[in-house]
Length: 143
Image 1 (cartoon, rainbow, N blue to C red):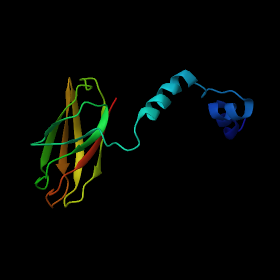
Image 2 (image 1 turned 180 degrees about the vertical axis):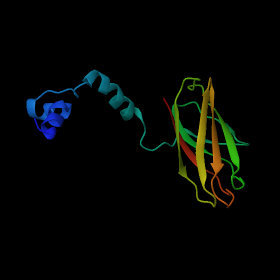
Image 3 (image 1 turned 90 degrees about the vertical axis):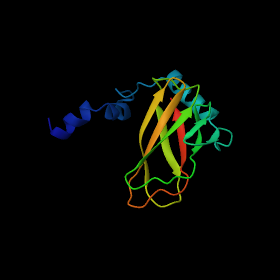
Image 4 (image 1 turned 90 degrees about the horizontal axis):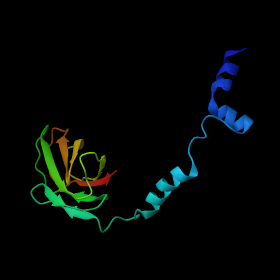
């Protein structure tokens, strides 16, 4: 038997397309519906779950939201930590974050997010020779 034929036989997708069933049909509709329901509940424009930090701290009790830091003055290679009080967060939560807006000099990078019971801490570093000099907008999702 040729190598290509062995590969085709061993692949679940090939079986699924050719024979109608295959090894990759493992997601049940009941499992997928939870994901669809979650996404449908999310607001397309997040205007209510917003907090502006004061002295690196703020409170937002939602599983997703937008955080705006105070004006930053982080030197090259320096770090900033922001503590967000959030009653939905636990020490076992996964907190996904991304920088959604920054218009100043410097290059802010999120390199650590540490969840705990009732809060999480985001640590940002400046990866540029120029200092950070404006607020950072961070979006988050707690899973």
